[in-house]
Length: 115
Length: 111
Image (tube, rainbow over all chains, first blue to last red; front, side, top):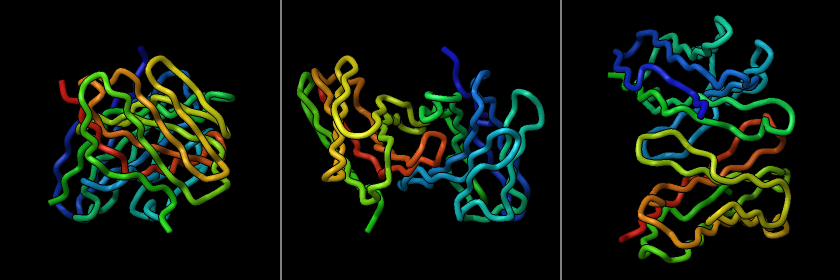
């Protein structure tokens, strides 16, 4: 069964450092998303991406964040200068086109720890 | 007022019981309603999705949406220990838009 793959599963970084979280969405999907979940809190939307541009973003997704689809298979989230409060589980998700694009499929997440 | 609310639980039931999980929301513009299951330290897994009011059944799972009272439910029949997880409700305005999640209800099914 196709799945969304995320790497690494766990990333530890120092405050102020840049991190890149990587995702391989399901191959025929057209919509790509990043969500995050701080420990014990709700899953929160960060950004959606379609047709090589951001289609929607939340207040969390400020200038420190950026997304990219560098090739036909990868989708990345970059945090330019990490803060302690960026520590969270980051989930990538993808969905198909047309009548199926409300069905989001999530990866297993990257646990980001900012020290 | 929070947009989407769920009782955090934990809800503990014996194996074989019927489980009822509930979620309320405040924004009447939501059109699509989903239930996700999340195991510890894993990503949410889509269980059910419905559009507008009504019931939808899939195996042991039934999702129910009442838009007039802004209330959605997930029923699990013949619950199994493998159903032990956190259940998240989520809503969106249109397909492809951001999902708004509830905080989740932790379910424990005891053998």
